[in-house]
Amino acid sequence: MPPLTKQLGDVIPVPASVRPVPAASFTIIPGTGVSTVPEASGVAAYLAGELAKTVDGTIPIGPGGAIVLELDPALAAEAYTLAVDDTSVRLRGGTRQGLFWGVQTLLQLAPVVPGGVIEDEPRYEYRGAMLDLARHFFTAGEIKAHVDLLAQFKINHLHLHLTDDQGWRLEIPGWPLLTSVSGGEGTGVDGAGPGFLTLAEYADVVAYAASRFVTIVPEIDMPGHVNAVHHAYPALTADGEPVPRRTDAEVGYSSLVAGKEETYAFVEDVIRTVADVTPGPYLHIGGDECLSTPAEDYRTFLSRVLPLPGKYGKRAIGWHEIAAVDLPEAAVVQFWRIEAADENTARAAAEGHRIIMAPADRTYLDMKYDADSKLGLDWAGHVDVRRSYDWDPADRLPGVAEEALLGVEAPLWSETLRSVADIQYLTFPRLPAIAEVAWSPRSARSWESFRGRIAAFGPRWEAAGINYYRSPEIDWS
Image 1: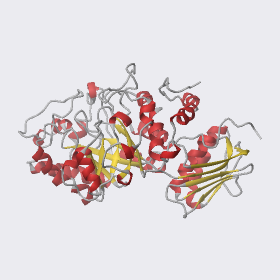
Image 2: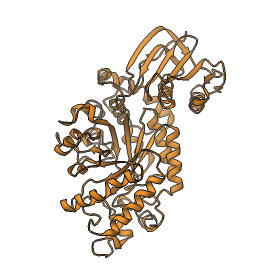
Image 3: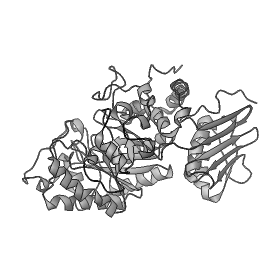
Image 4: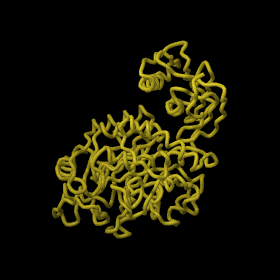
């Protein structure tokens, strides 16, 4: 038996249950076969492709393989079990999605897989990351590469912030100036654009993410954060006069006009288009930082707009400011601030609305790690790796208990981003920390254990050319 360099539970997120058998292990080599049922052939092909890279050789798929993938309807949808002995690896999932998450665990352990049994399932059904395309655009290919990195840590939602004051990043037929003007040259913070996704490119991203069991959550931010709309279509402003392009990072100065019927015709066109090309269940309508929108106008606007995602078969998500108004029954509230309490979010939870927890002082990947960080902002303070890890979503807000939580999200705003390397620097290693908060049972988590397990990713990231932050909190040696 080859010497083991890792333990069975040395994966991220840490599994719910690990029962090691130290005397056993299974070594994957070129030619090790994968067997599966027809319904899971896509997962098997993915596993074989990834293992081929690990062992630098072919991994065949067919009957009699020592790695066996099975579906077990007795398991929860995202649950899996992994059983390893000296002769085989047997992986079972409640669905193909559960099987895929088990594959991620197996890939972290390969090629020498320690013996024993893992039984695992997620704490929260929504485990999200967000990427802001509006302040700085990233291409379809770059988004797909990001999806691959997220899926390794069992993140199952990618929220795309598609519109803001600086840019509009999704094609909307009938409103061509949104992208030709506000997705063109000179858009984005500091004019570092251009770029937008055509509907075909967006559909390609959505399909690719789905192949990794990641659901795309599109966001069209409104009624604030709309200077890009007004710059492209002055008729939608209060006085019909043109407004200049804005490439600074200020917030709160723009608003759709609640008293104009043209506003709602525009909004419904956009929501219908986005819903039509988004097979996932969610459509995010923003709703944050509407500092120039009078409170009554804000209520009027949301009373018209919040039901629209439901009209087109989607469930509305909004930043937690929307909790100040009456919400449709299925609406989800996303908490993002740093305050210790929020009355409106607590009231929404009490009324049965689900909450996504994304407090900026714990989960915002665009915050600086420390004062010396070369990228990021610091309005929510410095967020080092331990701060991203050492908290619990069910303790974050009074009145928002475990049963109210849909899940956790790690947003990455792009004011200071200019490249994929910048995304990676701010994402890793904090995203794995937040992924463990969202997946693993509270009782299984420990900072000391995590910092040891995350250190093992340093060499992998270096080999893959991933520009991770070498946090001094982690012993990367």
